Image 1 (cartoon, rainbow, N blue to C red):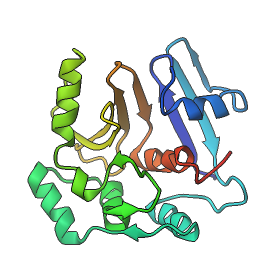
Image 2 (cartoon, helix red, strand yellow):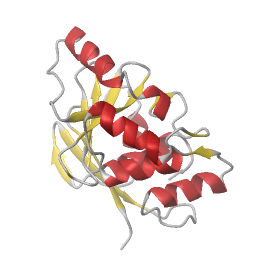
Image 3 (cartoon, helix red, strand yellow):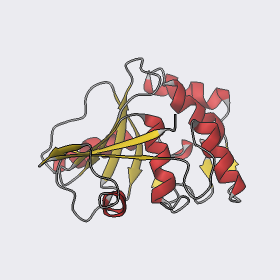
Image 4 (cartoon, rainbow, N blue to C red):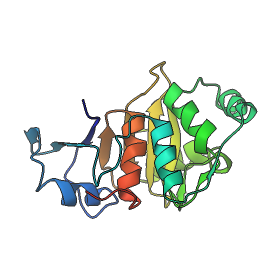
Length: 196
């Protein structure tokens, strides 16, 4: 069975980073859920004659085959992050860090997601949510991704090895991914590596 990417829009999507997915795919692939504030979109790999992308190593191999240089974290650096944040990372996130945690060429360039950028992300997200008068982050939320200071992504550190991801905008818009791996896979599309 081919892997399926599910993206849920919990509010009508305006002119945002994820508009790309909606605009490209909503017309060609019918939503499997019809709701005024919820659209679930499914699409499958492989596309453009590429091999199926089933895990972080497949993403890494695809990036390397496209000339991207990946810089991994060490086990010691991953352990430092877990100690610093007092969490146990899910397996998929550990794999991401150990394969490309310090950089991945143009993949997610311009987004704060790599080792040297992680420490202040929760504080930045908290401040942004407070200023926008939005609900605070859940206690067990780990903010691992920030784009241009107004979009944040987090997962819960509750023992799920491939947890759902919530993307928050300062506008209050929320987008949910079924799991962390699907989020990283979606970034391939958003960064232009994979065209549907």
